[in-house]
Length: 312
Image 1: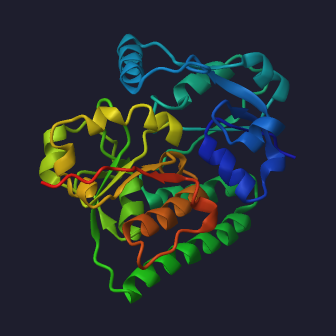
Image 2 (image 1 turned 90 degrees about the vertical axis):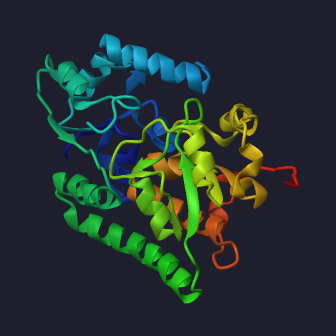
């Protein structure tokens, strides 16, 4: 049987979702907990065990990128012991995950050269197609189609429900970082659209970018979702004051509507098809609470920011 290493948490999640985890031998330090308990961590990061602020992390990553330094590294001894046939890697973001170039350097001295398959989605459609790519590489393409059919049924249930309720799209902003503030990109705007929202500050199928606070105040969204990449809800709450202390915070419609939510980043930036489907179901419930019930399994994945009502 083929031996596989996954250098992407999303790929690892989809291998488990599709029941193909028996092929999986090596993972990254960021992979789902079940995988970390059962498989060997091969990719590590200099940030492991550290607790930097969002601003410090941004500065650290920017400096490392400018200086050509690598924040991720491969345990080449463990990789050689596994001797994988396939390594799933990515070229989408060198900030939060190891890329194909670094992976290629790590495998250059292996006795057996594995096939490197880059999984680098830009859109929600890409993410779903990636499931087929992964399963097909293992000779199990039909498994992916069954998996995706179930997820598409769940998404259709959301959109059909919103259509039946004649729910008007909500004006939304989803933040991928707090200091500096980043908008959302790639597949997240597509998730927002399917959940009955529209984010006019987003970058569909493109990278998230720094955005000014003045632009957010002028846009004045009805709903604000804060989901910094890599941060738990608790970790985000430690820095929420960086937003609440800004001039104009209290004037935002989202604040006045008591519609500011801290959300688990994995439902958006971890690009497995099932996780992003969870994100759509959660967002629909946050945007349209009168029409959509949030599934019980997702009620711990968000926190409504308790705000003091200020009369303007």
